[in-house]
Length: 478
Image (cartoon, rainbow, N blue to C red):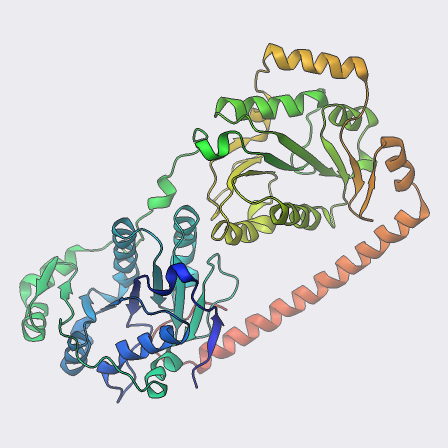
């Protein structure tokens, strides 16, 4: 019986839509003694069980000089496209084919990858593409399906169990009325028959052309995407929610805290955003001067007390609670240096299902690009240096004259809310808060020890798996 590791029944919009399959035969070869004509019907039977009945296209990538004539004939006879490239360039050509296919075939449609390289090679670029244009996604591999990837999938299989599907299905496709294409990628040549294909691969001309192709890197298409786009119409007047980590991005010495909100809003305005803005500032309130906190609150910034042990967890949970209550279109902004460490994966997954507009600010440029696709990014000090309009200056003057708080106060350690700053200060100096804070610190340290132990065990398990695995392609770490 096939084990389907993660499966969801087909949504109506995908049930009859086309399914395109990219298959790395180096990682997921045809087992010895297996009839190659059964690959297509096995895949079709597996997706049919989940309610998919749309047309299926399959492209098999490999160094086909190593593929037997029997297998080539069997695949082509069932309409499987056969594409030759050197093993080291399989991922590159699979990805370039995916890009071309996505350009020609708008959603709804399903993409399926059969490869062990999803986590290590495809995940980052494909997750960014999926955030822009979402397709349904399937995955199969010959090792354990990778965990903790940036991709959201609807179904995952082990390769050997996927090939067993046809045994459980009485219907098989048999031979296709239209043989699969036979293509040599290095030579950009299509062949009419298996015989001519094999003959071409053995020629000196092919060997010379193949030797000229040295690049193995994926097309960095998403790395070229610009930043700070003008607002799209659906986002221009939609609400903007800002979560600000004051530990990583503090208010500079001598800077008037009342300027934070108008500086941020002024930058939004430059890009064409005019929707309502909510800002929550997270930090250790006990270490911050009253004038700073009252200055923030006087401009409607909510102030949330959170110690370093819980700040990112509370920011993340508050953000996800907000997402549950506020469907797109809307804009989410994070001001933090910990995007990849604490927030990226949850948001990348969210963006592949419910697409929000994303802004990001940080105190220094990240050393690598995030998998999260953003519409605008700023350096924190640059954001605060924005020239504020005369209108906003008058608003600041009124706030100064009133000298009153308009933003809420909360303790994210004890999960309590307060309307007055003095009430928050009194709470933070109380015994109940001290006990809760001590408990959280103790619990955090205990969880850290367990996490380290779990990592050690996982590394040991992966090393054991690699030693026991038969050759046939490297597996992504689980």
